[in-house]
Length: 96
Image (cartoon, rainbow, N blue to C red; front, side, top):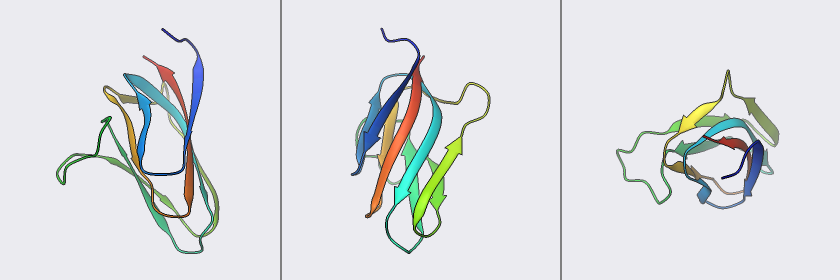
C-alpha cells in the first residue's frame, strides 16, 4: 500500500488511477483555443452513457487547475478520465 500524495499524468482518455483514492487536485493543460470539457468517472474502464461523472471545464488555451476541498473527492473504484483533444491532465491523489 502506498501512502501520501501521488501524481498521475495522462494525455488520452483512460484510467489515471486504479483503486480507491481521494483526488486532491486536478490540472489540465489545454493547447487549443476552444473550450474543453473533462469528465471524471469513478471507474477503471470506459463508461456507459448513463454512468455519473464529475465535469470540469477548461476555457480557452492555457492551464486550468482545481484544488479539491477538505480531503478531496473520493473515488471508490478508480479515476477514469474522458479527455478531449489537445489536453493533458495531471491528477494529485491519495490512496484511501
